[in-house]
Image (tube, rainbow, N blue to C red):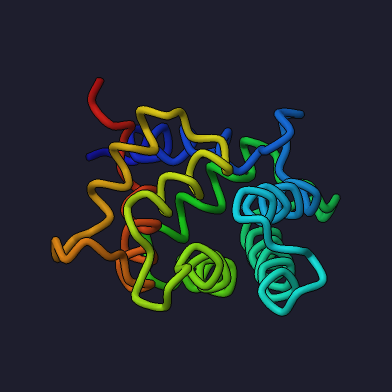
Length: 172
């Protein structure tokens, strides 16, 4: 895949991060995502899990801003996202995912309601809370369980996040 095509694929992910649809990614988008997950699972912001999720969201924002906010205005424009994220993903997708790991870890802790891993139904709930369509949430949840054991481990979530960031939209 050529560089332009790769950047177009990464750009298609911009809207998922731009939770409020205002054309830029900022700290509030990450807080909004955390709040949506907490509400979906009826977890309070003041609980240990809620605090871990907000801390993870802040770490994710700081990491994203650190790699992509070129002009330092505390907002990541679509162009900054494409340029910053595409370069980091191309250079080392696993390293890019490390900025998301605290957030993903906290999401897994919330969605893993029985301590045995996130069920596909739990993954669907997370994805819908984060703005995925019903069809996309169902499709993604099915593919997240890479080993087919009916549970989604944190390692599978992190791997799926890396894949999501660098692959095109799912076929219709």
